[in-house]
Length: 238
Image (cartoon, rainbow, N blue to C red; front, side):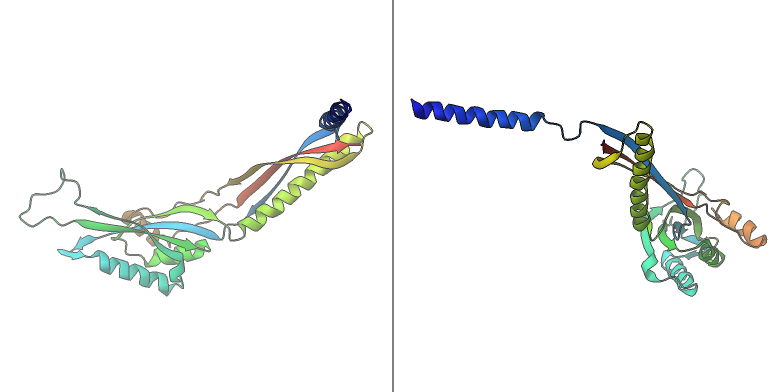
């Protein structure tokens, strides 16, 4: 009987201690604040898609193999390494049957290819455009932009955002005669990137390319990439 009573007493004591531990709040007073940080950087990674297609010239078909070879030679001539050039897609088409003229000749498929080229500046883009085959080039367009140090910039912004949150908590707590203690939680909702837009359009077809060539070429500039990060932090008050 004494043994049973002893076991019950121990269980009650343990249960009481556990309940006290669960109920106790180490941070009875807290303050929740938001902090943010942003910066602008000039993109040094400009991804361009170049659409090339076979065509006929004076009854002779200019093959895709030649067009590809010429294109890669153009890239090499302006100092672009093979590592920044990749194939985005291949395609083939017989053209529009409704506008195709009747002919006894066998219809030939006009194949096409799309290259993705990564540039470090708009100047290099202009150099390549000036060398492209106007008849083979169907389109030359910006796909996206970025920066080689984007991960480092994000890290810097996150640190700055947390510091901004702590500073805000400090002066808000001081307004009610309180002091900021330890950080209880840090919520990282995510960052925001605003892509820059082009200030002048790139050449989209052979006719436009010829017109721009007659005006001395196109000047392409980019706005800076805007990076922004926000954070929500809960601080204890003491």
